[in-house]
Image: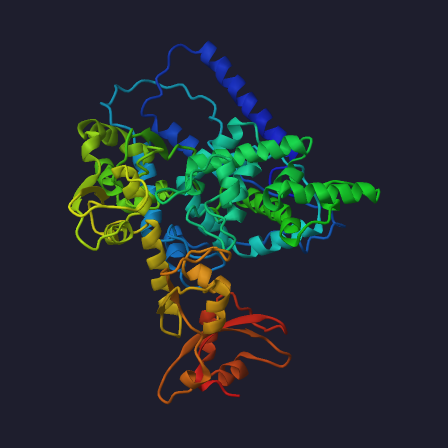
Length: 605
């Protein structure tokens, strides 16, 4: 294989050379030509706008195998961002995200357009304009990424396997690049400013699908998927109010700092640094030590590492190749090279709904830009920074000047009554016990009847803060309820309980409980905690007369199967099977997997 990415080193050099020549020509004409006014030159503007650079893969020699590498040929139709968002809940290759909605996509596009809108000016008198050479092309962020690739091109079977997956699922790439629209300008330029290869900015695609709300069963959180200990080690604050691992700016800077440390640790080898970001530097060091002892090479491709880490670097390089081949096409959601947000230091705690009103944006948009905040307000102890869309910065700053810090949060004066405890009061006002202690200078748990406590409360109903930590769990559970055959139960944790015991009792997995309740698989339960559980339906319940139970099944095609026999076996129609499996080809292959939604009470044995 001679070419891994759309822009080879040679092509990049040619591109830079062409741009340099154009700039030189402009300079010479500018010197020879007196003052020229280009204002309102429609034909020249159209000429620049029509100009584009097409990214192509270098042709391979006739004797080179292309079965794994060749991109699909012919015209392909791509769905719009809105269509992708609408179909998110159907056939997903990534988990659903709070960013995957038509409203979210439209809001991001609208705010970016507002930021780029220029004020109208009075028309100037027409003048004769001497044509100038075409301006260098303007890259979107994906094209700019490709132009700044810095990792070595490698021909490896592991990359090909990962590439085949991403290349066959353009809707996945469109979805994750749509999610990135708010954040990618900052992430890419932050990497380039530190002289890091542009591929580093693509790591959130394989870590979280550019979902800052992503949370794994291993307790990793945010776009860069920091686990709690590593996050704290890099200064990412984590408490009841805030999880800095989800902070767009702070987590990106922390990830870059970590990667640069690893890059230095492994003597400038980026592949070993990236592998260590996933598997830990200790794991990679042990693998290097083993190879040295056995007299084997110590580059990434020669090391024996855990399976996830073995695939991690190939995934990144495969994604980089797909981005290179599709930059400038409809497969990737095009993002202009324009800043989307600006950080504003508000100086004190502020209610997020109130901040959203001041910026004239929705509360959801405020959370999407500031996903680190768990509650309805910022952390009273800081940080006090909010990311605000560029188009609304001045309005927000003006409103902030008019609002004193004492009015940025609503306070409740609560008089302690007989039978009260800090726990009961905290539960009543949906705040933490530590918060009440801190604000009211209380040591220990003793409180006195008749005393008054100051408690901060949200300015709006809980539903208004739909992307706060608690509301995201509720939204997730509502989504699960729609897709589960069994009914949700609320389980109250008792003494001696563990995730393993609860999972065994209801015949479900620990990972399911963790996913439904946004917990880690090793989370410690507290007595009195309430968990949402969807028990596995028993045979007796499933076969109850007159009850219809529709469940999703994954059917593995056997030799001799066809759509008619499968449809008959599961009491569905061939049309339904085709609808549920949109990428179904004309002929079935043994081992192929089909998604079926069937009434399990009518399956034919």
